[in-house]
Image 1 (cartoon, helix red, strand yellow):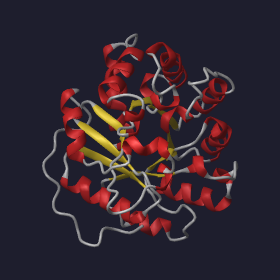
Image 2 (image 1 turned 120 degrees about the vertical axis):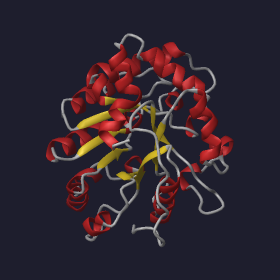
Image 3 (image 1 turned 60 degrees about the vertical axis):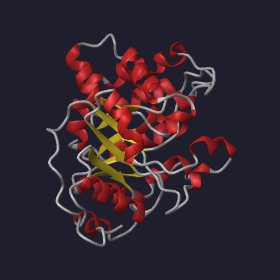
Image 4 (image 1 turned 135 degrees about the horizontal axis):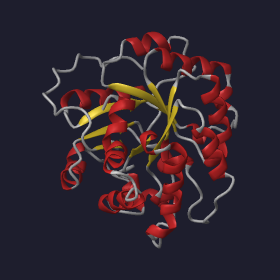
Length: 292
């Protein structure tokens, strides 16, 4: 990954940081590159190009002031395009991009990135090696991410939570953000060992968790809020409201729910919190973690 081929234009004036923030969404252009993870008929409903113009009405409807744009493919070119979009779009407060953690030149690459790069992510969930996060070359790359002042988003499954916990303990200076609560098996209403493993990860103070992606872990066509809320509440109970970030996971969420459904579900799950705690979940924490 390197800087965009041409320097981005000066970033437009944007609103003050924080406010209400969607800390997790995607954009992709299928005319530029495929999304290999979309293999299978299950992805047909989202097998099209999504732009910021498609997202904008949803943000306006729910008074979302800013967003964090997250990579969807292991592509340096995609990351450069997302960074260029952030340079043009005040709504995009930061980008979680992709880079090869095992590249010895990673520190130099990160040093050349524009300030819109808030963190990195890799589809660890697809790695066949259950100890991928413990590989020496990967750990060196994660240490470089920490040295660059960036965060690392963990896209893992519930089975990889112990490996994530070991990584958090081994690299206490690395800020880790768990995406989608490690994908609990909500459709099967399975609770353990996910619940205990999530709590173990939360014991590391360098970790936070996104309240995102839960609707697509439930039964897509028949889920009810009561199916998902206990999992969301467990996230809030284990990490605490000042280490949880709301994210829509749009447009992937539309496989199971509309944007309004996802916002409503998160608001229901956080209804017991104080106003200050809800404000943290819906924006303040994203501002602190991502600089959004």
